Image 1 (tube, rainbow, N blue to C red):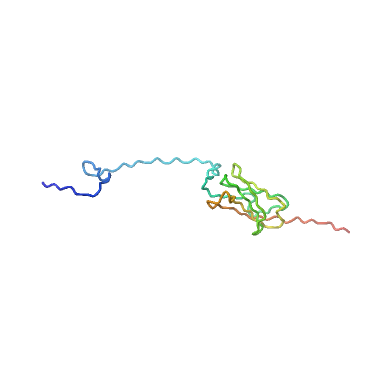
Image 2: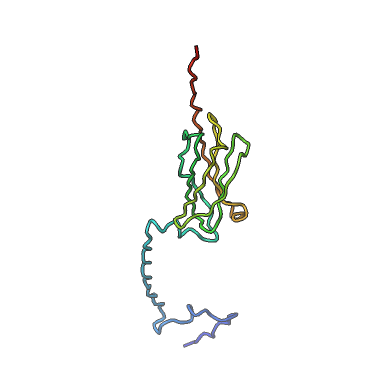
Length: 166
């Protein structure tokens, strides 16, 4: 009976090909099942706090007044916003068309709410304004953050009738 000389190979065989059982047939590997990940338990009220990360994109929203509201021109206007990055300062800008009328800054409270007061003396009756809420540029240059704009209209001035004097 003739025996064959072993073949010359370059390099070494990998562990997968060199480890064969005595019968010469490869054995099937056992698949180990990974345990399913546990579901996260997140309360709805804590969602705002979870997204306050360094890489979070600012997504402020004006919640009061609602868009296209008719507001009074002879009283201070309370503006409320909801924000998702709590570590930043936010700016509310008031535009008359393309012209910036005024702006105000505020920091969010623990619930992620920012409050602003627009003084009545900057609002004229019968005009349409744009309110824009954004992250302060010093706090939010990167990543590019979003802003939120709504339009409001101030109520027309109440006409005063002067009695006719005879």
